[in-house]
Image (cartoon, rainbow, N blue to C red; front, side, top):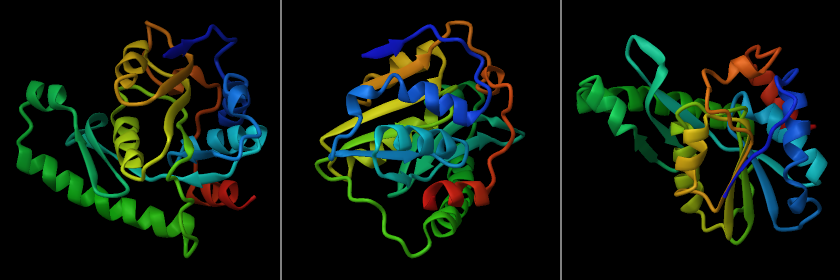
Length: 217
């Protein structure tokens, strides 16, 4: 079920977004079975604030968008930890993107995904997810391709419940993710959605160092 809650938006920054999002997740506060996973890079500062306020452990879950060549912000799919690949068939068909080109982009992004895994976690093993309630957090969703890949990848680890939680997302994307996750919490789900960054006063790029600080603080 999607929670489309009217809020004050726009958010000041990702920390403010995490504070407000945590207010919609109080049912998960203080529970021993809850794990919060942030999608890097921008989702990690949001997830860190959610984890802090829910008193839950935080980890990173790496996902890479597959951008259309020449239009990198347009997602034709995504890949996630564990070898999961999600293809946005509508975009691929509309733009007549050859499947071999999709495969080439996926291979390149997999290299970056592996680099981020090493950079963010180092030798620290990922948190166990089997039998637990997993909150997947990002700073916002446009097409939802990356989050869809993350949900499918997390499912393979055998969690009891997967919850998608974001400060803002396109209403249609929130509805579509209901078929993937056990619960979808979109603090703001406007029908007139244009971009994630448009809902933040400060949407500056999150650095690798900031991600590491969030995970070790």
